[in-house]
Image 1 (tube, helix red, strand yellow):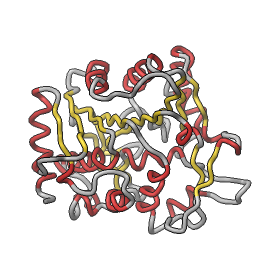
Image 2: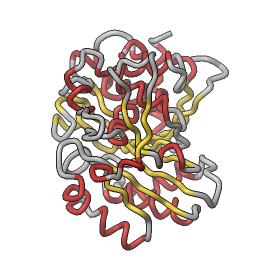
Image 3: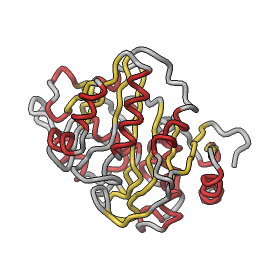
Length: 305
């Protein structure tokens, strides 16, 4: 590994099921400032329990921390495999928003002035796409994702893929079905990465207490790494996530080749979204139990050099 890594990925053990303690310990490593507006993107693609969607304790801990340190917390979400309002109600998100007093935006029913039109000749999207304006306007942006494979062409769904949920599903005004285009394109994984070039992230928390090593995103073969990870670098945390999946044994698509040759990661690195190689990642375990995991994952990353 490089002696001067450019991005840290923090790891902490979660085997005692105390997510609150683990996540708060991770949050102490990041200075998110105070005041202003914070935009939060969680993972509620379907109406299924963790690890298909964000664990309720993870969301509560993050929301409590962020509401206490911001003037306004806004969580925005679109469910690709379900009715967004129904998913958010059934997963307890509406109730938590009322309890803690943060704003919840249903991106499935967002007005046209809530979207920004992204256009660039360098994209694999045929005519660009629309991204929720809040993720460009907010002072700070926090994302929480899960550890999963993706059987519909993404190969894996972590922080980079989680960004699909802040893109419009369709636009009647533009006569476009963005999700149909994405999931039918041979460039799907490149298009996923490209979304991430148009918004920044200050913190990503990946709840890898459990995950799916095959199948996904809403169901699959369960694994229990018993870890929670955090980083400000989407590429770095996804690369560590892929290494975790490989450690447990995963799909041929995830296991094949070098981690930084995975199309989501390779395209994101090409666009300068985060680190460009495994050598630039520093694993920082925060307790003795996560030390062993860091050593094992570190060996997989070191093999990339």
